[in-house]
Amino acid sequence: MAVTLTSMRLDTKLADEAAKLIGVNSRTDAIHRALRELVSTERFKNVLLEYGGKGSFAGSDEGSK
Image (cartoon, rainbow, N blue to C red; front, side, top):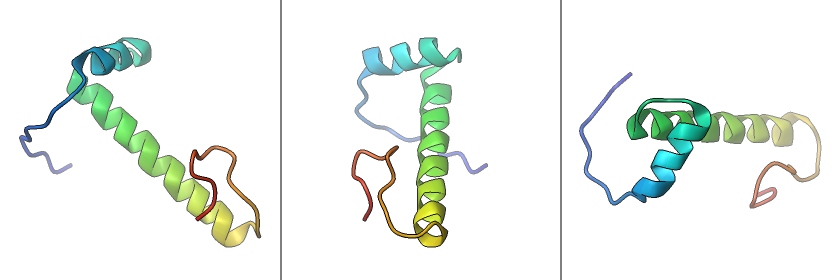
């Protein structure tokens, strides 16, 4: 995994709450997990849309593209 030190504006209360909810020890771990989940969900949605026929993906806020 490529890791780079990055500066960003972050809602620390939200990141701390996410870390607590998912049981990780740091904001970084919470953000990494959230990004992995997002990527996984979008890849799954794309597979369903490509091979599953027409329709929308109910797990997405944006619906089908």
